Image (cartoon, rainbow, N blue to C red; front, side):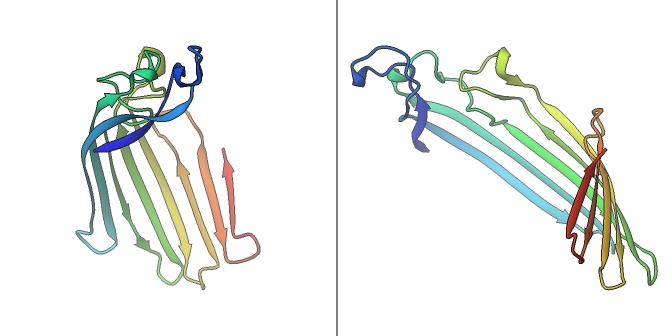
Length: 178
């Protein structure tokens, strides 16, 4: 149970005015139930598979009438709270003898619909989406002086790639977006 939820009031009669005021106050209660599961599986040496899943069921049980019709209503979901999310990723580390290692990695994640505002509607719906990312890490065995990794973020869209260079020298981290 979730009590004393902060909700923005659409009117503030307690201050003697019926005009819109957007005052945040403890004006709601809700019930939330959910599950979250995370796992890492290493079936063979150098291979790692990780996955996670979460689901949340949310229901307003009380909304102060002072919140008005411009605020959340029964049956609506809170801002930026998808009902479910999941992700899965895998990586395999290839040894390159005395030089170091090369580790490719792939990740896929999915998020259900959510809303960008307290008043759920088509104008603030954030549709469900899936992201796929891939990257490669090259690590040196020479005292860990250079660690290079590159990744393509969101393979399902037309966004760019990110490259990170990490060293033990004066430039600890550097990043470039392409």
